[in-house]
Length: 396
Image (cartoon, rainbow, N blue to C red; front, side, top):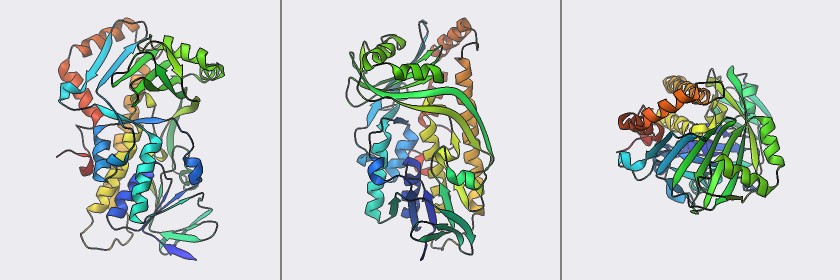
């Protein structure tokens, strides 16, 4: 039996569900497919994201911001190099904003979006994935285990290892960062005071991100694979001691609260975002280094821009399945991803061993700290206050 949709989205993460909710609100018939079983998606995942103001505005526009449990605003940010005197500090007060952003558990955002989709009657199928994909007169035909779905547009929001991207042979630009990210939750002797911290070590950056408990932080530590494996092999007290020392004891001694998770880091960018009737969004389209926490914001802006493109179609008309109207939006998103990838690579190289001579780097950080105008400009870009944004991510 064949069932007709306007859009089929494969992947029920933050970006896929946000896109589904936005398109559903425009009156499109959307189905979401997720290969993981619902029970398995709710297993402990300690990853968090730093949502900027643009992403917050988008989620407010979708009506889900207040459904997200345990959001932690961060009002300050400190960046420094281990054992160095120069330190960059940023404050929301400098921009007359209540916060620089919010640290949220990825799973909390997913649950809020899923709740909103359930209320709208949009179908989200867990534990299923496309078995066969064929072009058809209606657009694209997706065969599942027990039935077949048809749609005018197929969207991959599957993440960095997208099967649809491979199936459609999207050309990719990619390179290995040579690092693994270690993620865990720690308890600290001193309160975090709503401050996000990042220390650059010779081996890679370590971020301490504040959580709702004043003495809890999520850590993201980027390391060469062998060093990451060595740290994973340590017992909990020894690992916590290494984190305390690596962070210059900025929050005192810490304790490990959760199991450690690790993820290899690789940069990717699709040269095309649309092939045939398959569209890439989020990490399926681009993955960047987590050192500035901008990956999920980039993906959510993809979703917002696509929703906006559909919203600009003539009012009251039935979408006929034609996709040319998406091309300007996709060129914009591709440019944004390229700029973000280049920016992250530049920051990574700036602090890499053998990169800029440390005294020069320290002078540059000190000069930036003394330049309020430049600091404000950098903060506005990171917060999503400046630059070209989808309408639903803008203020006003």
